[in-house]
Length: 275
Image (cartoon, rainbow, N blue to C red; front, side, top):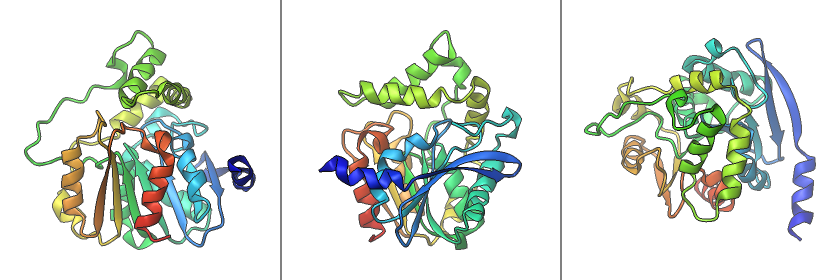
């Protein structure tokens, strides 16, 4: 029964290369719901960060996901991977696909891009969803730890460093298959893209309380309890800054709940946005 239900969804998927700012951006759009859910992946993750969750959401939404600059099938020169360009591309994809408004989701590092996009043009969004990413928001008294670039992570090769990262992201028992999947999708990006994408993530550069306090968008925050990369206190602080927000902590989950627990993530999204 499960296979029979999932097959029609996959057949509706259309793969596209969009011309965005002179780059060929790989995107997927599927589902026929009345509202659109646009997902942005993290760091050098591609559309596969979201695909398991989106396949469920497509029952009720039109879902769109794309490989952002430097990830998956959207290779660009590393010098073209900047924080502003990533935000520009959100609107480039929306315009190319004739999406007037949507719910925008950002995973991990993609939460920074999603927040910046929402602050730039809040009128283009009906809602916001941030998954295991505080958007660079940190509690004011938090210890600022030096950020170590990927080239300095444990391991002698780029692949070994990706394996270390994927293992750290998945503390759940029985997650070896997810780790292999994560390494595979991350390895589609070059080491240069990995370094450049990492450098787009800011320290606290905005007056976050003042900036985020003017965002009236319904905002769902979902966070894995065991996430080693994003402190739950930062997610709680972010939630306190957003007037119409809810924080869901997924017990026993690490950094990749959209891959490890797609049914649960999709349920939280549908319930919060009343779809």
